[in-house]
Length: 409
Ligand code: SAH
Image 1 (cartoon, rainbow, N blue to C red):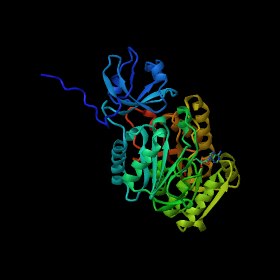
Image 2: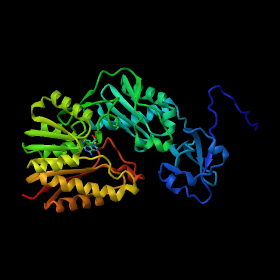
Image 3: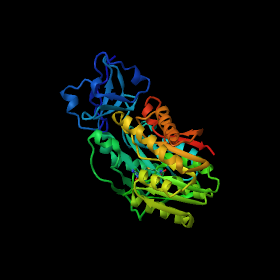
Image 4: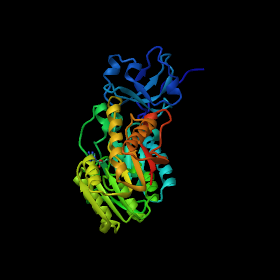
């Protein structure tokens, strides 16, 4: 039998370069689904170091068995991210569309209206990529070099699968600096005419997709907003670290008699006010701009008491190094918030710090409540909603914690 000569077809893909695990670095974790290779696990010869950030390569174990197609960033501690366990996979527009289609199917099952986190990075098979959907608009955060390099292809795939007409590229992700990425938030497709109205939990939120925090809204808190709103008994509520009114607008929609939102950001409070107007609750909604710690101490001095108090601060412990100081800050939030809760009223405390585990956060919170001379019942622990699925091998992705408490009468 004669062997066939190699056929060169015009669209045969260039073979990908190969990167290899160091000898003695076990491939078991990766075979079992761990999606990352750290820099000290990879042979970083001159050829690998010369790969442009975001290049594709076939990852092999030390015995030269292929493990899959990875995206390589020689400048990052996460030097390779698994894209596809099939070493022959072509990472092209069809591949991107298939990943987005799979992510979309989950969200369409979960939500009646197209407002959600559509893609949650590794857990949705698109490493480092965050996409939030706001009806006919979407925001892409390409927080890894491979995605940054392919953001136009991602936008094409997103538009093709969802039909969104407006796409924003958001360059505000905290992880981007670790990948050596820069750039500005800007419109990639279509046009935006001011903030987008987002219906959620019976409220209307206003999301600023171009100039706001995060991608515009904290979709991760949706279920916790809803649970807090269930605790609304028709009395007044206080929303500390309110941003665009996440907790307060949901509570007003559930019949809170009044809501006060506190935030240091004027633009965030302006969005909250616009949301209250859009939902028809402006008469029961007030805001106070300033430092939350000062505001809580001031309200206590004024003798203010609320039936429900929610505190959702920024990440006080974004890294392990900041953990002790972060836990002290969570304790302080609880100590200042507890006196503002009316007898028998409800307190919701949140943490979005990756480094603070749920137990440490709960202990810090209960310590603060104790220091304020109050006792608590723990009613419920919340986390990010199911449009923020977790990757089973990345414990860090379970960052959001919400504690629901009733304080003594
Ligand atoms: N609760 C919101 C999300 C809050 S994000 C929601 O559910 O949608 C944290 C908010 O804290 C941001 O809006 C930020 O502007 C605000 N913030 C950060 N530091 C602050 C401080 N020291 N005092 C008051 N607000 C602060």
